[in-house]
View: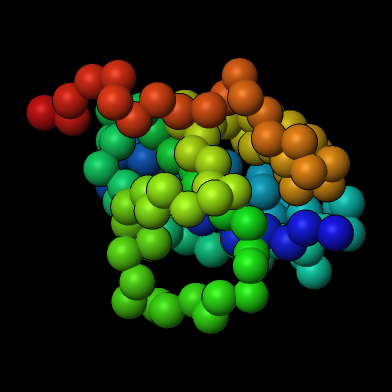
Length: 120
């Protein structure tokens, strides 16, 4: 059974776009489905894709110790099993929890495309 780490951006643009509600929806969906032991949920820093937020990054937990000063909290690392979701809402977050976390099936139609524009 896979384990995950899910980071919901807490940058100012993502918060203005609703990332606090996305984080609450993730926390509630994980609890409702009894998935807290399979998925560590935390707030990440700004990933730099503010124009695409709220942003969520899900990574497979491979047992690597999480360094609180690691760039993984504010940039995509390109690691196997890393998925970037953009334009998240509470409803989309519940779907990600149900499909990606519970069923190990990333929701491809919600994947973000970080190279789709500049954040000027």
